[in-house]
Length: 277
Ligand SMILES: [Zn+2]
Image 1 (cartoon, rainbow, N blue to C red):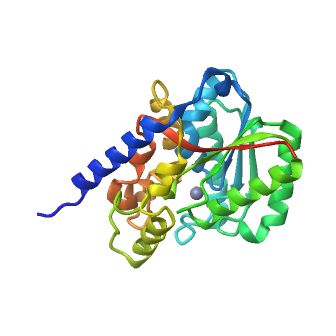
Image 2 (tube, helix red, strand yellow):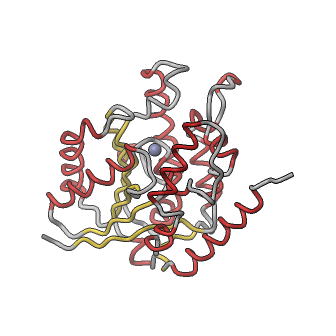
């Protein structure tokens, strides 16, 4: 039987080895820098930066988490948006706690899931206010290629707010959906999956852009179990509710090939240093 997955596992392994070899690890001073993590949806903070948040908190850095949207669209065909919104807010606070971030340092901006771009002006204003009040030196935002629309919007609007504030910061971009590109994952069976993987493949140029851009890393050594525990608290995304077969979870994405991308030896980031204006 032709099964592509051992081949793809091998390719992902090679991609990670190449990335890991070239990437530089955060040093102790960098781990101590105060940070603000911007997540388009609850769970992106854990998937993309859970290790960095844990390592920074261990080093004594202040870390704040900003959730841009309410995440209410993930299963809107199965439960009401209000119920899902409330559940995802609780899940996010629980996961943040496991990552070492108290409730007072989690900001739920509550913009509607899937519609961040149409709320762009209001979102930039909220982010600008948070940057001025808390003065983080490290910002974590989603990568702008191969990502869902709210992820790209988050990237753009944080950069816009940074430009308005005019203070020097270092931005670390993290990949979530951008890991999902051919040949690292298959094209899937449904039209929708195929379109999504194809879009990621084109915009990351078969992942070559990731190899070029992601040159900074944080080790998951000693924190990976806590990262898993934090992700498990995003139960709406991790467990099939009431055994409902249509309730999709992150385990289902790409036949289970997606989730392991976030539990490799290290998290990788694209680093962008922004000078004062
Ligand atoms: Zn997301």
